[in-house]
Length: 128
Image 1 (cartoon, rainbow, N blue to C red):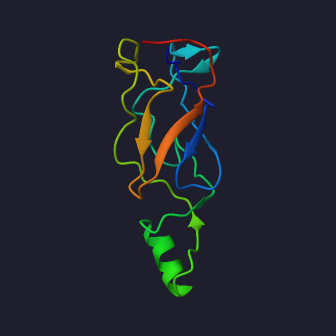
Image 2 (image 1 turned 30 degrees about the vertical axis):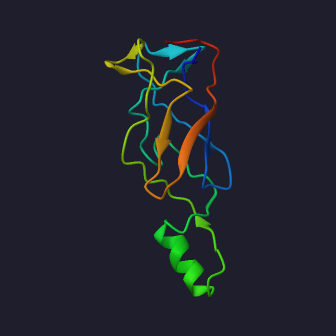
Image 3 (image 1 turned 45 degrees about the vertical axis):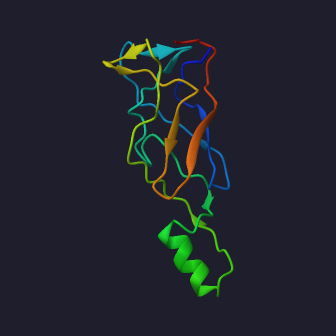
């Protein structure tokens, strides 16, 4: 059964070189295990989703430019996530502040082709 995702959850991007952390801003009355519970809308880069170290996909314009300058040798560049859409699918039943709760089976896609997943939800609370 999926688990609720809370502040401090661990994230991984398929195109990033390092793990990241989810930051859920505190909202009164929406916590699990003493941490704020996430929603599908907690996908704002640099606010909710920290960078993943170095980005290695040529779909990222910075990586493409650095790789071209290095005569075709892949040259990773600092990650700056671009997350145009919310996490999906989210919890099917649990609602936090009028939004679907974030569940650990949810994924988010970066505009530069990275698939972001939750590797540790930060809690043991199960959701549907």
